[in-house]
Image (tube, rainbow, N blue to C red; front, side, top):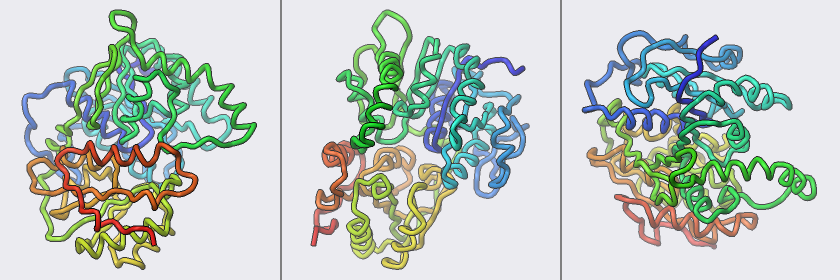
Length: 405
């Protein structure tokens, strides 16, 4: 039986896994970036033996679900006994990016376990049983999504001295704000619904949610420690500590990129989450394409194929579906001298990842007229806050955003 790791990380998205690698690198406090690593198919690779087997391919479902892999040396420091548990979603794009990120993590010497926790009625319970021993034994637990109900369920088993939250995008801003106010953890774009069955589920889940809130709100001088590792503009409260994620690992391992003369657009899943009207979004992308001479559109992993086809036909943009988080894709290059995005995580992370490269990151506000009738009351102010707090970005003039018509 593989001995339990002292540090256990749970990730459910490619960005969360990237930020776990950044956290481990920051904790290790290297003296410098080190030599540029050799590359294979455009992705830097560590020299020496890999921990684990081959990267599971798209059709290797059995390999994905086959438990842990490990054995190679990890960097010294806090992450030296780090085991990363991937709890993959069901959509193919996310799973593909997670496979690529898992390969990079193994190349860094970390142990990566692929644990299915979705897709069937009993999958969550089977995963919980498989992970329980390691969860109880870990001294440090790192999580990427504090809003995840499955992660909150795992927290009921945690006995760790330290809990670390790494970024899952702009949701970190809402997480810190809600824990500061002692509120229930609810995603900013979520609206109530589900009728009586939904209310019954919420009531049954309430004790788990309450336990998670207590775990995320440490008392100074007593019990466990809580750290937030973030690129977002957040302020720690109470006994919580904050460590800034400046994407040092990404900058050390990738790039600098070759710059093209064109402009790249960054896609968003605001349509898929029910926040922005699809027709308004298409019109906004078309206006930005004409305004800035954009040629490429980097799709978010949750954007639907139908939506992307409509965008391509309406704008002539080349649709790019990245196989890694955009921070790595942009740092690896080639990338446009200007990157235009709607309010999203990348307006906070790309200025760090692309520091010193000469790339300008620009952000286009979301016109309130684009919001759907089902968008949460918090959506408008939250999106405005994402833009207003972004550092080292260029705010686009108001006329760059199409108005309702």
